Length: 139
Image 1 (cartoon, rainbow, N blue to C red):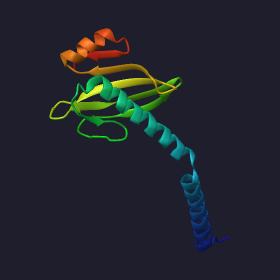
Image 2: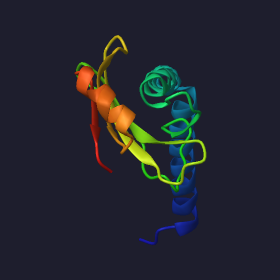
Image 3: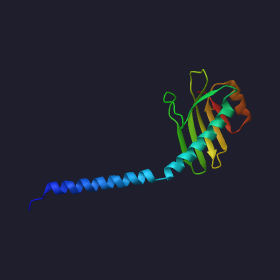
Image 4: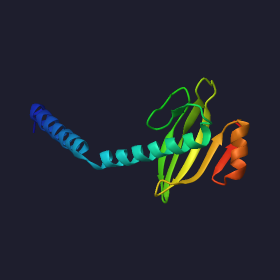
């Protein structure tokens, strides 16, 4: 018995096309991704405010975080944990060359649990001695 490959190709093409169309439609209409993205954006906005309040020292900061990634600075993450969020990134004060890394742990109410930075500013090291949530280490 001889198989008609033209018919087989048509059936295969329509099957694959229909499957791809269905998957694309499901991907586009999935609202969970948009909701998750909005939550993450809110967490990153709060983390920027917290970071600035701790390390800005009355100077403007340039921040590389999950919403504004600067490739030259390095990798950035936002990661949901069982009881909150972890946000990592880098910052530098305006005019500085070196980027300083940070790791921020937030609870489920987006309140600061801990902030660890790699910075050699003596004012920050002094501030870390008086605040148990703030940790400064040498870069």
